Image (cartoon, rainbow, N blue to C red; front, side, top):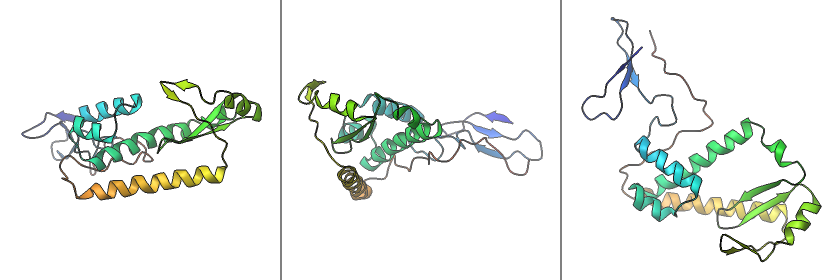
Length: 192
């Protein structure tokens, strides 16, 4: 296997079989998180940084990265899914059930639900109601699991509706991000 340098209009090189009769080629990014993306890897890394630092809203992302609104939504969902897969794969949930730990769910519309490991932890947290966190007042209210599920499902439905409404926008620089549930694969050229 050798790497062929990019030719006219190509962003990245390609893998090429070095058997003289074969010479099959595969995209340099084949089997990676970036395969199928019409956004540069540089932009994807920048968007990942913005996502981890919680910078800007959707309009800021559209303006900064020059991509369509539904592309922003797709990438944000992809980053979230990669993190969720990591937590699931590495059994992070065990740590959540330890005393003193919390499980935060939601946040799609500014609401977040916090599940505490014990009643004592919940009681201590309620004492923080009304205090400031990053110049925003904390407002804690008791709620049920059913209420939490309703708010999250309505937020997800709203997010899905917003993305589909923007489908008619200019499709330049758009794509569907890779499915994070698919394991990373190695590059294979059939028939070699």
